[in-house]
Image (tube, rainbow over all chains, first blue to last red; front, side, top):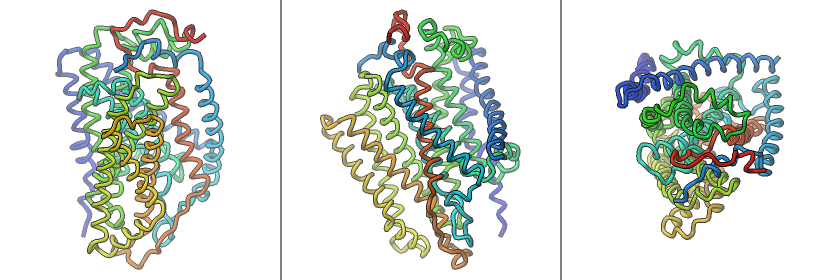
Length: 69
Length: 440
């Protein structure tokens, strides 16, 4: 018996879990009042925080490495 | 409902009070002990914990740290759920505690992630989890968790920032000078014209986060366990709904604890009895839902269940920690129902103690769930192959777990100095004394 069905993560995350996020971005862009500058601030916050977390994880790993030495 | 004045709201950002200094001092000392324990673990490895190889090793690889991770994730929902209820369902009675609850969400998510780091054998390789994510996401619920916890944290912080901007602009001349550069970054590009759009965006964020609650605490977190067929204690479709009920219960209990702490620390009478009665009703409903799920789990485990599940259920029932957790939950629920029937029985101090009992009970239940699943791998093809395991957490594990609670308290204390912890009514006059002057 194979377990090919376990390779469903892309569908679970991008097909189900992220649905509310797609709706939210649609609501931001298409909902009234239209104000793309404020939407830009919101999107910059979302993507900026994701980038900041990636950097923080890298820095955190390096610092922990120093503590372990 | 008693209205909060701008002076009251800004008071915590002024000169430190004795209570604040005591909290920061005690939690700061606790953090030093926590750092010592963590460095010991980092230098010696997980050998200093009670964790061990699962299966033929007779140990368990997930214990106190993962149990605490699940507990913190649950707590994270309370904050944003309360705030979203105010924004989406117009539950205005919770308005005074909405921002306190939002901060609780952010702090709880950070503490959840911290407990995952404690559990890693090589935390210096933390970044590898992100490098390999495009491959692991295809098949690993652990990678799904990384994605959704990150997403939840990002959306919660964005929500906090969007709703903070008008407040920070309104009080820009009243906050201590050293905070102004920080506030200028948060209000970058702000004009009062954006308020209407920002409110619409906050509404969408609130709806999105509410939709993510069942997908996180009732989804990717329980899927770490419920999808694994080799562990009869974990496997099953009920794992998601059960864990969601437990998570929301402990989340509301923690909101009560934090709200009561702020009311006590700053004499904030605007966090009045209406707020607590509302929270009692929600908590009673959720505690009953948790007990109902537990009834399902237990009854289906003792009545003509598969041998492995039956053995596990009886082991659970006979476990003293489980009995304490169940007793705590039942007694607490009875008190909550009594308060609903006779509101004059409400006493914020007693309610806080009851909320601590509820939160501890749920923590115990989650810990037992994580540990039991690995202690009893009795499902084919592992039947009679693997030993029945044992697990006893060491002082290092207890210190790090308690350290995450102390760190959360410390972060809350710092947050009260950085931002207004209650949303400021835009119709209120805000041009009186500065908080620093006001406390001299």
